[in-house]
Image 1 (cartoon, rainbow, N blue to C red):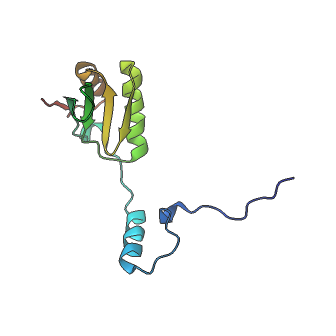
Image 2 (cartoon, rainbow, N blue to C red; image 1 turned 180 degrees about the vertical axis):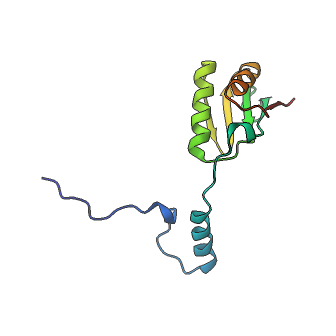
Image 3 (cartoon, rainbow, N blue to C red; image 1 turned 90 degrees about the vertical axis):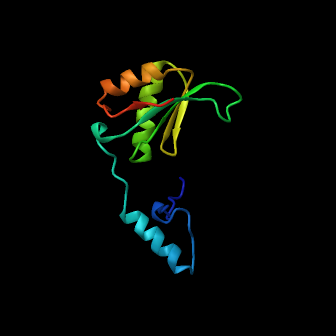
Length: 121
């Protein structure tokens, strides 16, 4: 029979074990209090554009301007990738969809309530 682990992981410290820097501790505490709320789809101002920078000439569709929690960004990215039938990623407030899918992405975003979405470039 395995022993139960008496230590639990606390996600509030972001991996910080010990610090005497009071500014850092205040920043961590403030960050925990100010959790980012995800805006409603009709309030999001997204931009959709084609991009080839730093991708060895490969074309991707870049969706930027998302304001909210990382899990909601990843969920929207997953829905877009599934709807377009391609791969991609979602991180740092941006969704990258492989290939030239600007028109498809715009139509799906409008269908899902993201009405303030603009095409750039």
